[in-house]
Image (cartoon, rainbow, N blue to C red; front, side, top):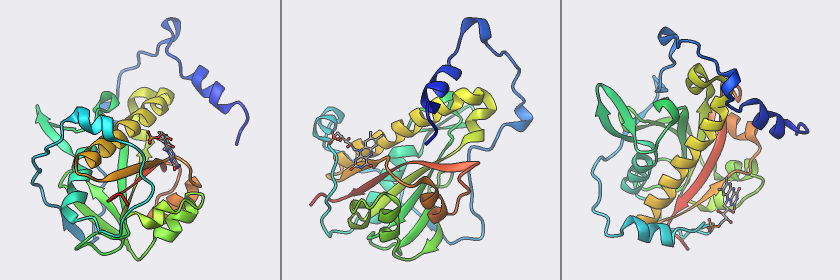
Length: 242
Ligand SMILES: Cc1cc2nc3c(=O)[nH]c(=O)nc-3n(C[C@H](O)[C@H](O)[C@H](O)COP(=O)(O)O)c2cc1C
């Protein structure tokens, strides 16, 4: 790891009154906020939302990191709710779709991938969450839990959990407007998504644990992204607590 890179980043991305860049945005170059995989199998997700009996303050008071999971599979309905609650489309205003988690400039740089280890009615494998139509796109079949665990510094919860959420960033979506300062916002965006996941999971009687420790390029390779224009930044396991 490069020495002092953190301090240089923090210092180099500060807004200062005497050094603000007021360039106009080139709207023709605004990156698309949706990634779509064509020519893959698509799995439509159920859209009904459950009546949650738990108020949000109770979810906040009960949330904790869960690292051991029972063998109960996650249902596709539970997975669907978790995906929507973490980063799905929540409303459309003036033709623009806003999502459940806030995002700097509503630029939505974060993509979500799902490693399915044990979800009822869903083959094990790697999926991309297509936000615009609330569907999963199958990228790779197989039992990949052990590979995810190896990439996550041997953390066994990645094998034992029914699903692992992996969040990547397409940096240009945010850099188009915020340039180098975008990196600050991208990590904040991912945090909001992860907390939405954690609290909604708690509301459903499920557990999660966020994961920041992984060999970045091993996870990038596993989900098939280049690690440069798009790179993994965060992950979380989810399932029924043991
Ligand atoms: C950015 C971030 C990265 C984390 N990475 C890991 C991880 O790689 N492995 C792990 O077991 N827990 C990880 N955690 C969970 C923390 O260890 C946990 O949140 C902390 O111990 C507080 O416990 P609580 O979540 O039960 O309140 C991470 C949490 C955050 C916010």
